[in-house]
Image (cartoon, rainbow over all chains, first blue to last red; front, top):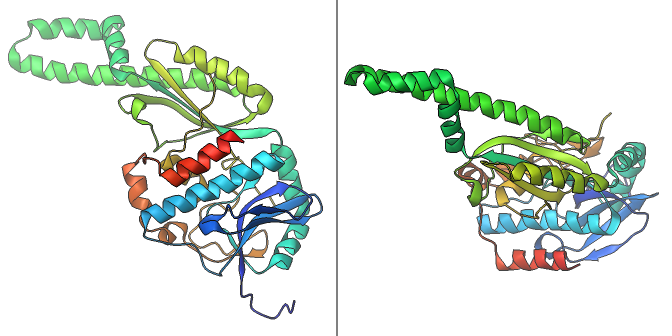
Length: 262
Length: 74
C-alpha cells in the first residue's frame, strides 16, 4: 500500500483478543456487518469493514440496536477467546487490514501485557441499597438526642413545635447519612477482599425494584473467576440483612479496567 | 448469590460510551499512535443524552431479546 495515499476505508474496532488466527465470526456485527479477526502473533483485533465516518443517528431505536450489537460482539469474542480488551463504541481506524496489523505490531507488548493482566477476570456491578425509611425509624428509636427532641416537640406550642420538627428532620437526615456512610465503608472493605480492583460508581441505572431505595454503595469490580462465588456469598449475607438489598450483575468485559499505559 | 446478566440500556451506554480502551474524549484523534476517525461520541449519537438524563430502563426489543437468548443458549 502506498503510504502517501489517503485511506478510503475504515475498520470498526470491537476489541482486542488473544487469538492467533484469521477467523470469520459471521454477520453478527453492527447493521449485519461481517465480523472477523486481524491477527498479529497471538493477539488479534476483532473488526468489521466500514466507511470512514462514525456511526451516528438521531433514531433512538437504531442507536439502541447498535450499542447492543457492539456489546454482543464483545461478549461472543469473550466466549470464544477469553477476556478481551473492549473498545468504546465508534472506535474506527482509518485504513485497511494492513494498518491495523501494523498497529498491533507496534503495540504488541502493551496489548499482550494488558490481556495477560486481565486473563480469567471479568467486570461485575455491585450495588447495595437500603430502605431509607427503615433506617430513619431505627435512628429515631436508638438515637438519644433525637428521642429527647421528639419528646420536646410533643409538649411544645404550635409555632415552636414546627421549628423543632424541622430540626428533628435535619437531625434524622444527618444521622441516616452518617449511618449510610458507615455501612458503605464497611461493605467496601469486605468486598475488597474478593476483588482485584473496585471503582466507586454513581449509577444512573437502577432497575425498578430498587427505585425507592437509597444507594449505599455502587461499585464496578474486576473479579477473578475463582472469587466470584465467594463474592456472591458475601453479597448474599448482606442482602439478607434487614433493610438492605443487593444487586449483583455481570459479567461484563472489563470496560472500566482495560488501560493502555505508555 | 449469582450475578445476573441484565442489559439495562443506561448501564450499557455508560460502559461503551465512556469506558473501554478508547476513553471518552471530545475528539479522538489517535490511540497508541493509530489514526482514528475523529468523533464526538455524544454528539454522534444525538438522542443518547435524553436517554441518559431520564435513566430509562428500556423494554427489550424482540431482535435484541433474540440476540441475548442465542448468547445465553451457547
